[in-house]
Length: 241
Image (cartoon, rainbow, N blue to C red; front, side, top):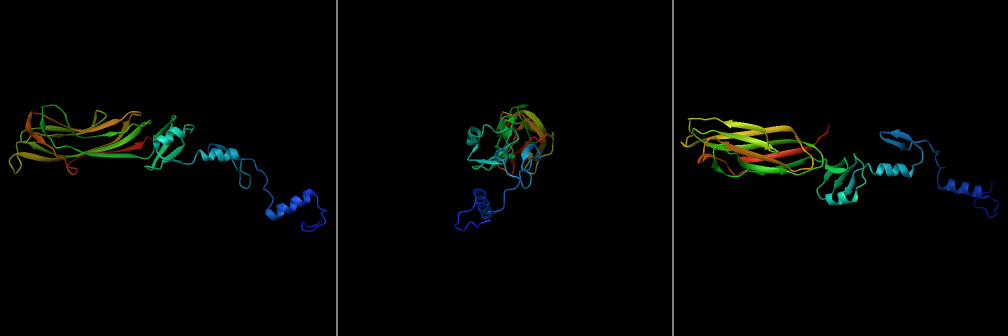
């Protein structure tokens, strides 16, 4: 066979093409029927060519990036359930469920309570609160509260931690005839935890800490407006089952 560098022009088109392919690299691999991995049935087998359909299938299953949540909602409307995306502004990962983008990254929130003196008898008074933002999917929450409560002698009160207007944890301050060293009141440090709380989808969920005294008067109890004395915390996770 003549060499491509010879000027005799005696090479056929096929011969010239073969020589060019040899210079560029090895001959193309043989096409192998695609294999199945997970839900994809068009995965290229080792050594086979990559089809455009497979590349498209894979691209919609990687974590796509968007500037913010509004951009995600407006630009990625064709995503199928199970697909993930992340917003760059806050670094939050979302997953597509039932045709909506649901937050996959756990949500956290906390709030410091207010200073308060007493209230009407048997009337719940909110001393700290926060609102869990709405999300399309059902979620699981873990909430907690810490309250320092000064209750005057011979009075009683109930401290309650409430999620979506339902009490999930509570403590009763009993009647006592013993007074503190200042002769006025008793100091109580109350910690209220609750977990595995199912949150409804599509609505904001309030979390509150309330105090309900058994008597009326400005001196029945006292709370504090400081994080180390009066606060409520919440962590919300995707519902995985």
